[in-house]
Image (tube, rainbow, N blue to C red; front, side, top):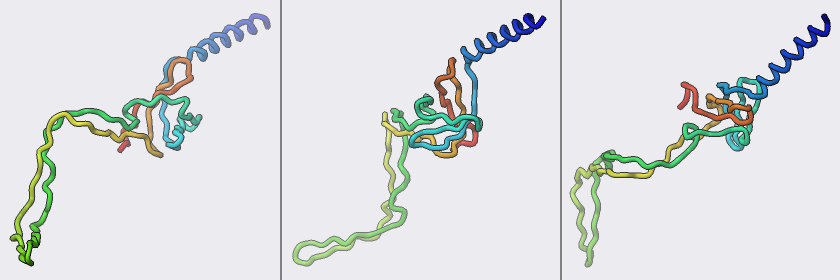
Length: 144
């Protein structure tokens, strides 16, 4: 009977080892502990370094092209004047005038999106099958 129990234990261990070896995809939560180099603490059990992390656009700075149709904010919030000097000591002072104005900005423009991780950010990670790399998908709801 002892041999049968040992056999059952060996089969269970083999099945568990096989399951762990394939390490199906799992979702984890972590917190950024450092940014240069990047370090993320995962559920207070392990500390992941840059070589173990794959970052998505949601957690990196990147450039992109966008189409805009904007007006800038008004400039020169209060009236002002200028003194203009000419030859032979002639001078002229322009009347104080309201010079507030805005400009149109339209068309395709390049922008920089500032999404890089910061210390303390809480993140969602997915462990790749096999368990070697973790994809940092996004911040959790308490983000910026």
